[in-house]
Length: 294
Image 1 (cartoon, rainbow, N blue to C red):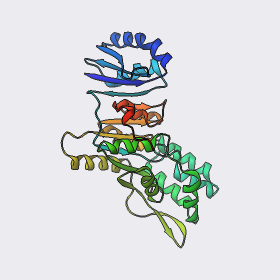
Image 2 (cartoon, one colour):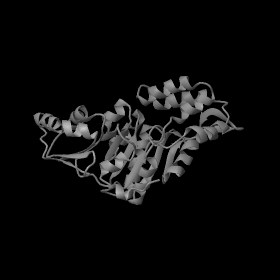
Image 3 (cartoon, one colour):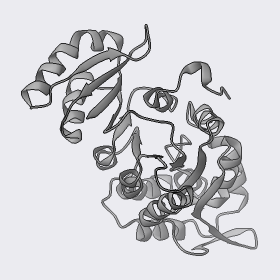
Image 4 (cartoon, rainbow, N blue to C red):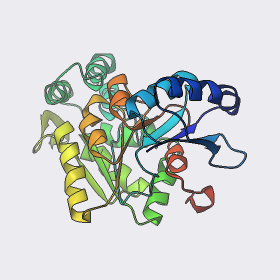
């Protein structure tokens, strides 16, 4: 069985459900049931006795984009573990690009960031290249950047707080830097932080990094390590937006791409293209009366 939960404009849901059902049936994926999950709201659920998840997502995307969507082979449940990327997922900026602005080279570094996020460049090589360009930048730029340019994504606090209220362990794992991720994690309520660390000496960035690199393989390994500690049968949720999030998204029970690059979106079980991060709570079936508003 496949269960597809979908959030779309009310008008689009009303007008396109029949056409989507017909296309699914023509593809060999008949819909056994289609109903509103929330009375009077634009959340729908389709149940299919069988089907290919990738094909189902593609068909629903054609009929309802922009939408928020999750396709699962079971009734979604509240996860025991939530692992999330930081930049452009939990916060509304790419920290390294904002630091580069203080150094007067934002366009140069942002172009490298974009290519890395699209999966066109080796992540570690691109990271080291960008960090090297920041050498001699004052450490004070980090504090100023945090204070003036780094803000949570809409819904981030409510998402984390609500999942934690349900007993979910939360981990922020980022290809960015502890100097940003640690205060962000504290602000949002994450239990653990994994990331890279900028090397700083005499109050300035040296252009290097301290310790091993947190890349796509580490993100996946962190999720699997946390899941092993929770035990067999535990479910996990992962969110991210870039190519280096793909292994983590694929390893999670529910991998959801948030306003993501095409490769990450294609690898995920679902996506958030329309709403904010609280849409994930809707897709998981958590009633709004149980949300923890922050």
